[in-house]
Length: 150
Length: 335
Image 1 (cartoon, rainbow over the protein chains, first blue to last red):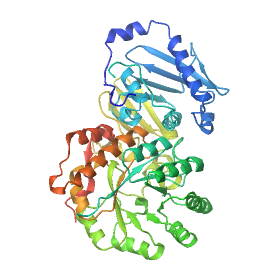
Image 2: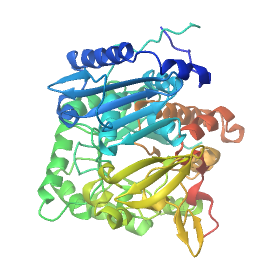
Image 3: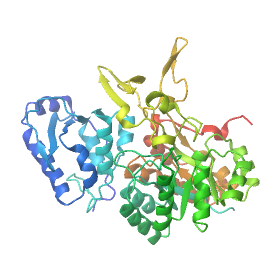
Image 4: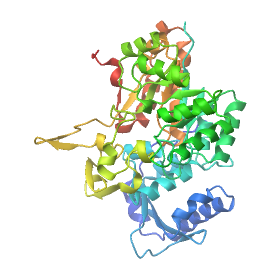
């Protein structure tokens, strides 16, 4: 089990984003949507707050990899949106290290936001609902990250 | 040596409650999922089932659960707040933190065995006010507003048998607890009425080239350069133009941090130290709880040997709003 491993703050070299932007965006979009739907299936997300997500368009952008995932929530499922026709209702943007730190619950989203490492734009209340929803999830086991070094 | 003050930590969710308990809180405080508490934000707080689970978890490890009902009953809806008190008693919380005098009266008459604390929102800053609440409502503890110097806190403690709880860490409010209407000025809603300061639906973060603008119901609160730390979108922490100068005219975004005066807090007999932040994530709760736990435990080796470790300061500085810390009123020269 990972107990002492700390995800450092890092930024990938600029050329990576340049390449990443040109790569297809569907593989990580499908992976993210698949993970979210798995969380739904295991009832990790609170049912009473999911209603607020209905019909909303979300975008997660990883700045230093050039990766981007757009997805929506409708009819009780997260769905990939490969060609969004409008601006998202809620958008998150950060470097890969910040997202990893968030996922591993190593850093607090407000901390990253105060320090300008996490950008949240769009519908602020929707952002707060999503943030609090993820905070309230009791992960079955501590999230493990496929990273080297124990 | 006086006994260590209790470490009272915030919980906006079950994982946050567990983080507090697991990292050394003596007590956690929380609220219901409605406007009876001053952190009534979307997706935050506890339904009865979650609270029941949380109480069981904390009690199994010998920790206390304090429930904040710290907003003021709105006209025609007093029964909602009274029901919250009844529910809290039924759930078996160790104490209820109340601000409104009418509710304190209701709680002490209806549930004379229930331990009651006077909330910081009750704005009692003198021992006379605290002793009045003890006499009338049998409060066992009062949380002091963040306006008193350490000497003034000591004076209060010397003149009351009510336990005294003070803030030890967290974002600072403008010093007008329980009476602040700044948020209502901008958007018609404030902590004392709807349970939320600067509710998210009025907040807009606007990304501009080279800067980010924060608006509250259309009012420009602040503009941050790309490398500048940001703060909460509240009027009190905005930068405004006053007579040609643009600056934090009311208050700077900053966090209270009492690590450096912990031995004094112990010496004067403070019964509990509170951490702000029910709106923060389980990660924040874990980080702050374990840091203050380590500092408090270091006091056990003797106050004279106590030294603030750089690692504690950097951990707390990292999670601070505005990335800076202050002793607030505790070390002001005023009397």
